[in-house]
Length: 267
Image (cartoon, rainbow, N blue to C red; front, side, top):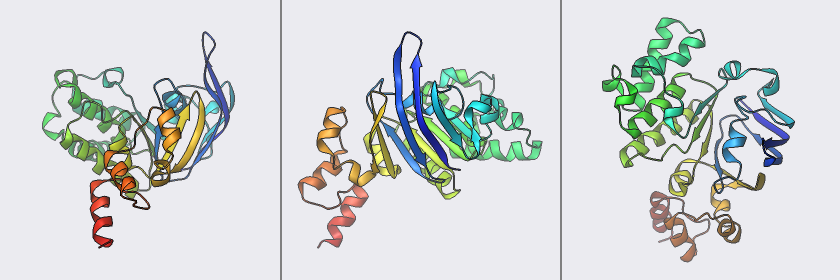
């Protein structure tokens, strides 16, 4: 489902300008990273997609729906949003019930709800915790419950806000597999993160936001070639990418696997 953002502005109470004439089009099925320093406007922009925030000027479209004409509850049919802090999202006393809440509210049949919940729990490694209170899980467990809740809704657009924070290597690999699966299903995935290694390995397009404006919109490999802009935005390319650039690899590798393949093909 296409996302179209046309010239939006947003000012928080107190006069803080968070977004300044932002325009962006994301095609169905794209995997897009939203990056930038803290306070740059990434999360503010993302929260316009599901109607949690409304622009002071400009328009946001998800498919043929203009967000200003639909409630957040209605937008939940099209955009699932995973908050950076899972404790802002969790409320149910049982993991299974937490993950089932969204599909149930969308009016899905009990059979479909059960299938979607069980699938989401399996994807996030939570099947054995289905009867536990989410608050009894550690931080990473609560993060995975919030992700499973979004996955179970099976919306055409999924937004992850800082999803790797607090996850170990195995849990990050689970998330990588989820993003790959969502992409295979034709869903649009947006990830807000400072984790350049994870983003470089899993996302195809990078959008850099700085002081409420889009400074760069480029494919991943070309994005990391913008050394000066990255430096002034307090972003650092993955170490393997910097090594590849030093060795003159064009385009530079974005992961260890890419680096090895490039070295082998260059022999």
